[in-house]
Length: 224
Length: 215
Image: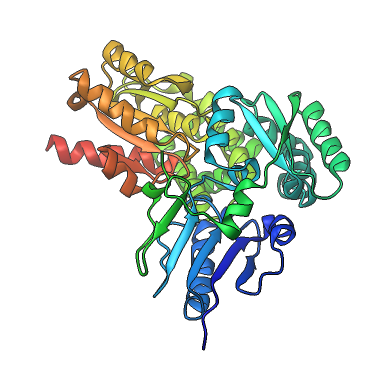
């Protein structure tokens, strides 16, 4: 059986963006995992390893649409094929177009809590978390107090606009969060540069962890 | 009166603040040694919280509710802890590394060390490498604790250890590191003495370390 050129296994959080950029190439296969698995990193590793094993026999190369993601991509290996992982800490770096832009903003705007379209849709913004997850667990007052504590040292709430979907709606939710938690709102232009590279390359060592067949990923591969 | 320490631990893990305050007051009034109450009731409770959190069986709002319960109980206990209890175990300098603004875990660890008899000098968040070194020179701690929540900032921990070496004081203290993305492998790589998977276990690991190294 002829192997396909490339399999991309990505987080569901970037599904819409990757599908937009994938121009129907038959030789590049896209597979998605449920999002929010980074909250249970061990489970993320297990699920990813299974997906890699299932894809490995039928592809020439596997690229992950993930970063280090709470160490969820540590310890992975692809039997018989190369495994390529973006050298990022989390999906914020993907939305910003790469690690260098991420580090630049990290220096210029310390204390920024980033929100993306996907986080807002899934109600993982601070207000969404308080209203839909925390309150169920501990009641509203403690939920609000917990979130205040979690983000007390942040100065900004930033909306990364990648122009997918209804940007006005997402921006308004981000502004609402900033007002509610007494932070300054800022908007940052997103970028598809890295998303494009995940699909089409080039995979340079500066931006990607490149593992030989059977080689295991380590945390140190991702750290600056 | 027999104090049910397991019940006290359970009140911490369940974050039942008022009941915990009541039980703590009752224990003190009936003559329970504050240090025993801490070591058998409160600290094991927070240790359990740390384990549940690490395993993904407890979520942030519950952890913070438990931490608040612990803090309220400590407020009751603190005036009763004797001078012998406070600071008797040693001195600790504690901080979050440069670029990192997260302090929930660090502050929890601080509270646990304080409870275990350490004098804790918490130097705060976003501390440059030299702030750790300066604090270590000034206070001569037995333990230096560093935390990071971001993989972006974790490498600063190794840099602090290198700065301690350059200042010639590295061997004068035990260095303990922690934070969600930190691993034992990373701790070994950068030359930390101890890695704590959660705030609760940090104290116990430190005690074991000194017991082994001082014997």
